[in-house]
Each structure stands twice: as C-alpha cells, then as structure tokens.
Length: 330
Image (tube, rainbow, N blue to C red):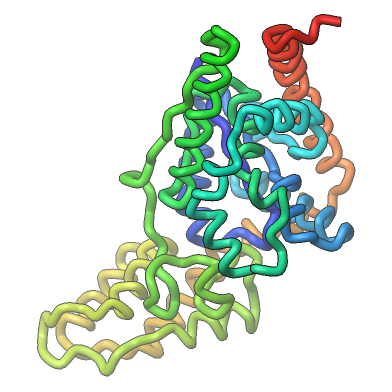
C-alpha cells in the first residue's frame, strides 16, 4: 500500500475551502492509502507563538479535523513535536542541504519580504523540516498545492542526494498527489478569488461560525445591480453566491433562484437569507461535533497517544536504519 503524508499547521480554524477542498480528499485517501496526517507545530515556531496559544491551536485543529471525518482508526494522526525522530532526521538532512538552494526558494524570499525583522534559521531551513516530515515515512505521494510544489521538489532533491551520497536507494522520491481537478473551489464572499484566510476574516466562512458572525458575513457578501435582461450572464459576485448555495441548499431551492435570476425577478436579499439559513443548518452538526471533541480532553489525549505510538513505531525503524547507513553503529 502506498504511503501518503500531509501536514496541517495549527493556524486558526478551518473554513469551507478547507472542508470541501483538501479535507474531502484526505477522507477519501484514508480508505485506500497508508495515511499520516500530522499537526505541524514545529513549523509554527518560526513565528514565535505564545506557548498557551500553540497548545490550544493544536487542540483546535485536531478537533476540527476529527469532526470533519478524519478517522484515527484508519489513518495515523499525530502531533509533529511528539515524534522526536522528526527533529533527528531534520538535523541529518540539514547536513546535506546547501544554504544557497534554501535562500533561493520562493517561500523564503516572500517571508523575508514580509517580515524582514524575523529572518531566523528555522525559516531558512523550513523546506528541510518539511522534507524530514515526508521522507521519515518513506512516503510515495504528498498532497500539495501550487505554493508547496517547490518544497516538494526540494524534498525529492534531498532524498536523492542522500541516496547518492550513501550509495543506497533507501528513500523513495515522493511524487505530488495533485488532486486539483477534484478540488471544489470555494469562492470568497467578496468575489476575490477562492475562500482563504489570506483574503480576510469577513470574506471567509469558518466551520465554527454561527449566529451574528455568520449572518454578518453572508448578508455582507458582494452582489451587483441585478440582471438587466432575461437570461443575462451572471457577474462573478453572483456566480459566487450560487456556487455557495450549491454546497448547502436543496436542488429545488437553487432552481428557484436560478429561475428568478433568469426572468429578472430575483431579490438578492432573499437569496442571502436563504443561503444563511441553509449554511447555518449545514454547519450546525459540524459545529456541535467540534465543540464536543474540543471539550473532551480525555478523547483528544487518547487520539494523540494512539497517533504518537503509531507514528513513532515507523519513525524509530527509519531512524535506526538511517543511522546505520550514515555510519552510526554504536
């Protein structure tokens, strides 16, 4: 069975784009692959998070992934910092990775531009840590977006360099698991591309949104002046509203608004109210499950313990073999 690895940084809540995008595919993957899903809390240290916030963010992201359908009995779900073999392999890989190639990565250049006063060594070697996460599992496939493809190429380069240096074929060269064709692109509420934390809180619907927070977001979604003639094409903003409605509303409700748009009788206020009601109904069971899991410390600790044991079992084997390949035999 092929092995898949994917990390999730504990940075706030999941949104609809996460839920209908990569997460939907992760849930499918855990049925057919040997999957490792981890909370990348080591990666967070480059931004110097408050210790209390870091711990809570780990619990939040775990709760939301579990509530959404990741199953600790089907996949290995663990916290990166609880597997010390990650850090050991990270050190070994840093010894064969060159500063010049790290400095040339697009992500590093962008981080330097955004935060010139926090250019730390961890930020520079971020791709090496990412490589350690992947090849520690001897992964064959890695789900990546376009922004992470360069890091995956570096992972392949590092794995290949290790193999050549030590005259072995120990590490497989992981391939991108590109499911872009299967991803549902969830539009932003302000009409500015896909839903993303990068575009701001107001334009993003999180799985935990409810009450006035959800109402304000939906009712503030951008619209236009309305159709000027029967069967006129939809603007981006209105297409976005229909796209969101297709995720949470019944087919007959969607058709009702399609018809009213076509004959120019549509009232966007009514459409938003319907979308709000349907979105709230859709999110309610997910919100309740998130709250239930988040408040059950014993269950979260159990999931982490089980995941840690499974993750370390394979990690110890890899590190033992890597140490022998390098020459540490004492």
